[in-house]
Length: 378
Image (cartoon, rainbow, N blue to C red; front, side, top):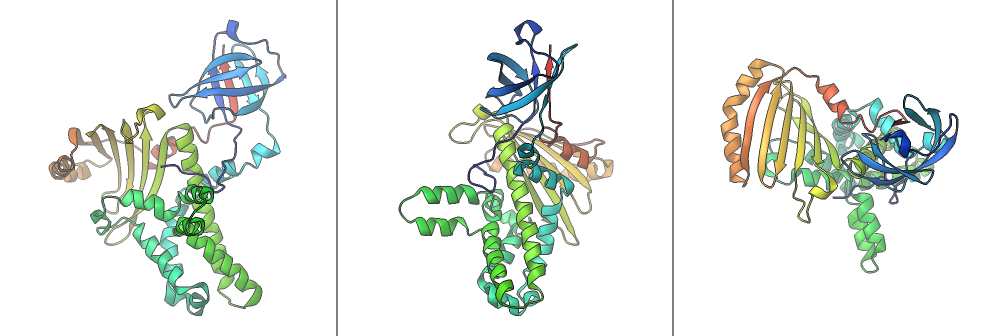
């Protein structure tokens, strides 16, 4: 699965890095000097090979890096260790990717809120006459997709829910459009198929609204157009995050609303591959799946799972001992279901642990949101 940001050709980033190397292997540097650092090689284990003044320096880094990227840096410190600082410029400050990261950080639950509000916004009855001009079929499709993206008892019947979620939301839209535009045959049909997802439908409705605002006077038009614009920005921000995660950390992040009898909850799911080389052609290899669950009655629960060649280690973590006691009797049934799917269960337990779900989620993003400095430890 390849997720691209909104533009088919990804934007470059002025990224961050930390470098560790003995002083005798470093090129001559002076305080205040501006030099270019080029990322020669980057692995998901946090190591990078940096070209600095024609000297190759091995780096240890937990920061966002990309092979081939060039970064202008200023020497800020030489002793007791060398510190390089990235030079800020208009391009880096106005980088669309960095803007998307900041937008996500300002409201991490914006996608969840969009799902809830969107179902009401795209109700045919609520739209009234406006629905006829926008296309009732597309409006119905939007509401149908929104409902299908919320995990419920009905969703349990679909073993491919997460895969369908990625396609239906539009995370792969740019990839599919790019492939369609490269094909000589059936081009129109392919482009059309690539846009049959929530993001594609919202873009179509947005274009129609713009035309309507020029020719007709519907009071609700401007409000709906504003909602769609902000919704597309939300989806874009999640595409950018997933693009950056997969490029630099071999990771994906999905936010999925949970439907409970009385209210809504949220599942934040992180899927991480051990490293890029651990995935074979069949997609197998060691994976870590972290579920951060905001439940209605049980409260916050963390499910930490490791999967390798059909073997599973799974630990459920709760803050409340009573919740833990409630869950434990169901673990036997869960193990039977996993075994029925062909998995060997190495470990399956529920434990009590003090944690902050918000902090735990933010830790997964710490590399993307780090300060723009380079630290060479001599």
